[in-house]
Length: 462
Image (cartoon, rainbow, N blue to C red):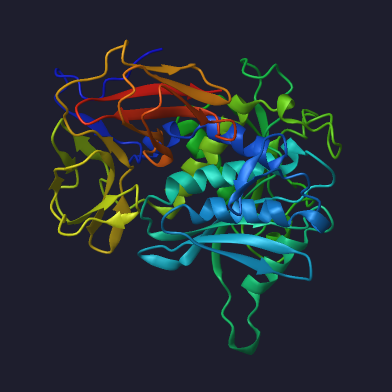
């Protein structure tokens, strides 16, 4: 077990910049772990918290995929600056649409999309991978202000005729009865982005297809993607397919004269999943390193075209103080544990009086961004000794165990890597167990304090 000392005496300050400002920094924050968890949950190989309880998505077939739709909508609703809604287009079909409104040009729209329905059980590659990538891109970009509008769209009933995307595209292009055609400048459709024939995680060809046709400015989107590949570092090799396939959702935007491309694994070189449209399409066959590279590519394209507005939403922490790194603007400090603003705390710096998780909302002009939640421990006189508190096992699978050898009253809170409290308890028992089986894989912090002592322990959930 390794104890994480957050407030070592020799640490002068720490800067938290998970919500990065440059495109390269944002790309570096694409989480392979998040992608794996999302694909596993969407394909029903791992349970998830949906509608307030632990459930398993056993089907994404169009006639029985409401739970998957709820899961996607709830995930997007946790992200800032998004307006999330269902778009019902027939008695069973519904798209999940999340809109991030542009600050300067709200009518200029870029769409990042994937279909969430499937033909049978599991279907990890087709198309839990595309959905997971859209949600990961939304997680990172929703914390940024952009000049142009981004729409994160998850289509239903792709597998039975591209119906969800067709409905959206037709509605967007409709100019009857006084309607105005939506100014959609680009559509990136991700369909099956997880299979590469080389052994997962090894260097190989990493081919992927860009399916394009000379419709509107679709060729320019292809050129922009290649430019990004040449600007930043990727382990990818593009295969341009022109004329590209019409067998996925992007083609419905072509039908309406919009610019669109498909990005996915390389069918052009016969390097697609051998388990296409079968229940053998499982998580174990996904090359998540390859998928992460493709997610980074589409994030970089989206951030470039949406045009990030420069606001520094990072925070510097000292043992006694939190400070916003945005020099000019207005500030509101937030208690992340209660998700409420802290009355009167509107200065650039903030001194917490109690242990907790805090963030700052920074406004500069029309742009408002929020920092990550920072775990802050008020300086205590002493930390727990190994003969007083023991936290184990590490890594953990199902249960976190705490030996409270002193049997004094202790407060225990467990935070995820973003600082959000996910478990809390108070006890003076000598032996404490905390259920962790339903918690997603990743890094967590166990914060334990008594009246006189406090310590934080870093644990890994496998």
